[in-house]
Image 1 (cartoon, rainbow, N blue to C red):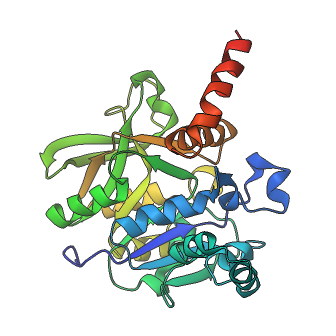
Image 2: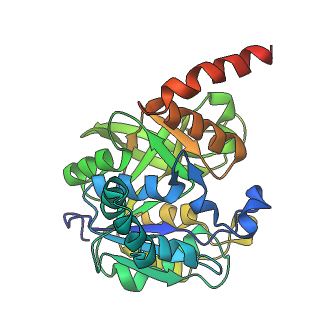
Amino acid sequence: MNQHQKVRKAVFPVAGLGTRFLPATKSVPKEMLTVVDKPVIQYVVEEAVAAGIEHLVFVTGRSKHVIEDYFDIQFELEQTLRERHKNAELTLLSGLLPKAGTTSFTRQQEPLGLGHAVWCAREIIGNEPFALLLPDMIMRGEKGCMKSMVELYDHSGGNVIAVEECAPDQAHKYGIVGVGDPIGNGFKITGMVEKPAKGTAPSNFFINGRYILQPEIFKILETQERGAGNEIQLTDAMLKLSTSQDFAGYHFRGETFDCGAKDGFILANVAFALDRADIRATVEEPLKALLAGLK
């Protein structure tokens, strides 16, 4: 097992259709919908880069070419900005651009689930551990979720899953982990169950969309039978992997916004706008007035 190899690569499964955001996602990938002034995918990539990730692997689908274009140089735009002496905008764009050779794109031809999307990245990842970040989820906290996960991985090796707490009576809605002994800045995971029946959950810690996984997961996914939703489920593969490898949990105590859902997307825009010194003064009072008018 390669538990002490550095985590250098991250997988972003961006092939989803985004049906919850139709009609907008008929022409715009859900990952490119903006929270304030940056696409959702940019927030997730920044989290990975801040954690020391060196190579970004995007698993795409049909009509997702705009994501690839976004992470590339746009000569016409930059030339126009240069001619108009828009130096601040030029600096902003150059700061968002990954270094040459640090992004890869592979195609998931069929929507067969998260496990299948991860398996599609196997040739690019190779025989080394990797991070997996679900692009719908953007995190807000004093410290990046993935950065803290890498710290736990450096301490414990094996596999790491980020979790958050939910109300115990809501545990049946999520993938839940069992909580074992403390380890590093996290704890040992004693089990995993997807959407447990009410009253049977081993804890109220749910998986929030951030993972560090060993490459042995690919061999399991290769022969993984379809599970819930007739899709290849990552949780099923992790359960099999946990019989031979350790899993640790990192308790993320910040906020997670599910930007694949309308309410999460709207809340993310509000929260990140209020975080911005250049915007807060112009939106805070109107937001208060709107809320007061709804009472």
